[in-house]
Image (cartoon, rainbow, N blue to C red; front, side, top):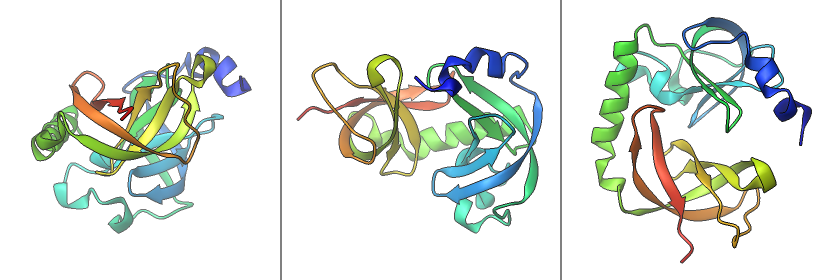
Length: 176
């Protein structure tokens, strides 16, 4: 287990949802923007949280640049996945509207199979995976004991629904 995971609670004890943080943009890609906020883990701005304006939610077309200093709001602290989720949106209402838009646009994925790339493995025995879905969205899944997956592997998952509390897609590994 890495120091980052061992010290997670200590690292985040003074960080709360709603806090404003400043950091430097390290990477911009289809899922969103990774921001160095001065901790051993990067902050992440999902593309849904780039702007209150729907037309400005494509990371590759944003006016933001790698190396730029930005201020963002902490919208989630994932103690299981060891992620700090950030937003550039002005309002909670805007975030909820975006999540509802996302669900409406993607309601047809529920019950269907999608491909995904394993981005990271974590948790006890690396039985959880951070995956990037073919629809351009990132989420976490549990890995059954009987399966072995590796970082970078393409897998098939079934989408079971949406988790409104965490604003995430609920998915599971499709073993077939």
